[in-house]
Length: 252
Length: 365
Image (cartoon, rainbow over all chains, first blue to last red; front, side, top):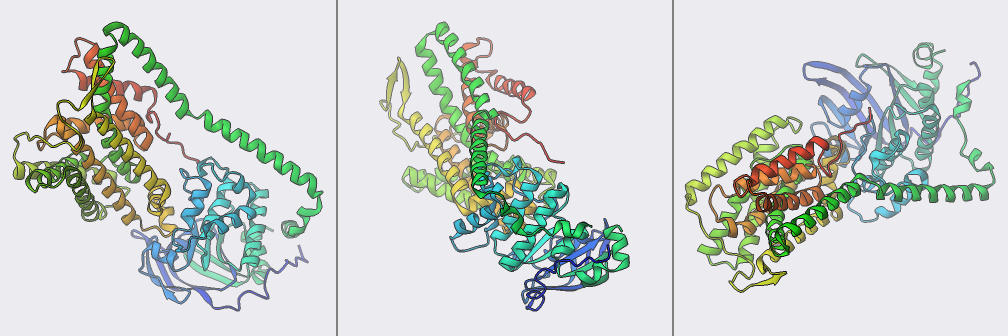
């Protein structure tokens, strides 16, 4: 494992744009239990940023804190607008789409209705084009457009969750462990498609992941979270070659 | 060396012969469409309806053989009358249950209060009957929205017990308030349909009143409107999203509080309509919706508490069971009809705990 020259994705185009997300001194707690201890990080337009960390490090909490789904303190700025203290739907309206862990599809609604619900914040009527767009990216969803989401396989639900999030044309897509519970081949396929979506549509992404190898493939930048604090950050190149990261997250 | 393995370029897929690929795709999608159609046809809903229909036909033959066609038609018409009312009330219960997971015990007295408002408008302020009913429905919707905002939304939506207690409190408050304002003497409620002595026709010797037909059509129309609201409008989609997954609804930008408020308003309006339709036969008192509510609970449970279609089928069935059991089984008569209806529910729930149309509680783990 010496000559790993990862296909540096979109390095040229990414990371130069304006800030889509700025997080300053972010604290979060579940009741009396403090989980995040002052996080500082940012995501630029067009970038894919990955947050690595072990179980319980606070990865999911970080995403939930950005969306104001839990008690938080600290500043969260989305596309120049402060969203801390706002309600979750307001954060979503500011341009954040969140694919939660466990996918969170509307299981009693059909695939197509899930996508329509994903576009809830949009005022325009031109949903058809976007729906067809995502059906062409994920043909399996198109085949099952009238099936209820609860009857889909885990991989299909994950594709639906991603498509649903993108239906709102977000400025920032948050992905919470998209690989969780999926077969390795499906995960590879999913990450390849996420990479394509980032490059072709310019969708900015913040991904929380345990599968560091796959995440590095599409990420420009990475942060390592331990016990609610960022202990390491850098380009995915740097972190991929960092000894500690290699041992802890890549396993060689 | 895993990195190179995962970094497949999109080009590798298109290497194969695209012609046979396309054919295979087409064949696959045709097959999966066929299976889907089969699946839809064979869903439990149709099987259950089939069993029900068979039972109903068997009972009808027995009933006609026993007491003759005329009595059977008469009892069916009477049963349908109550059944459609129960269906409308069950629908209003289901709307709230679907969205919140809570049975709204206040629903009956909310409907009673709305019916009194209609009464005041029509009898004391000489509104045309339909206009009075519609205005009362609108005011009920407003009232439902206010109750949701002030007394339901402050509670954690997952704390079902607390919310249930709040609805019980409103059941008592509205009952007492109505007693205070309007006292307990039964009042005759005007009917919005032709209600004269001669507004009826004979069917196989049985008497069917135009007012009855009016009730059936009104409830069916209401069902249609509610269904269109839920299936074809944006707020309807939001409502179904919230019913399906509260957290995900927030994550697509739906204001869940306002959406649930819509559900409360809609349920309150439907409830008031049901009250106005049945007040003609039961007379209007502060407690007139009590029995109706119990039958409607039964109907909603029977249909599966989270199914709109189930509420309608359940309501009609309960109405029919009530009159048929009372009519055909001597010792039940009028006294035990309520108990019989409930016995039927218990029996069905023993066999199908989620009701006839309800969602089975299955979760992917």
